[in-house]
Length: 256
Picture (cartoon, rainbow, N blue to C red):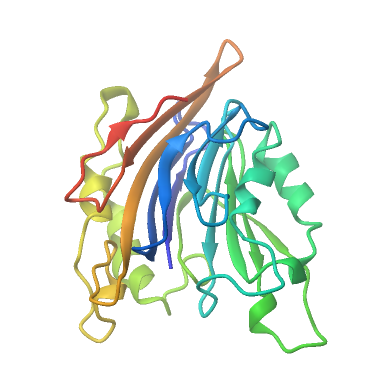
């Protein structure tokens, strides 16, 4: 169960601000964001060394893509493809709208259920496959939802779904937080939220933004991303990455 938070401000100099925590089993090997794929030289993304895909990446055009498991679908399953392929497929495109329309035609039976976010400075979309969560014989297509202006928070459930312990606790905090200022390299407000271990007593530690458990599952790394209005036709991208648990590991610049 990962978390993605997006702030959309279409007329702002920085129309998209994104924060994301990756939660996974600690023994699943991975590498920090880089150009790991020779056949995709324009893509910078973290590498899941087990399946070869990624959880979050950005291309030179300024398209960002990230995938999350939906509830009850953690881990691989025989006979289906890795969901880590999905951000890479999205990043083959030069804009978020084209990517979202292309991935809407995926066969949902090829993957376990997922939430996929695809965004650039102009558009942002949430693609949802509920394949694992419906009865056999009625398999709905991949849903495509336009993300509105303001704050959107997605975990293993739907956008801004307050049935999620984490969304119920943290969405109001992100909504009132001072937005990060990429020009001043000031990310303090969102950094403090991404590293928070506050959680509802009934939810337990997995209701926190940064998860720490005694079963090997937890928050492995974190990202802060800003996509700006293009300058001279060139994408403006800022990516800060913590290659470990936020709060214990500093955020450092990623070269795009």
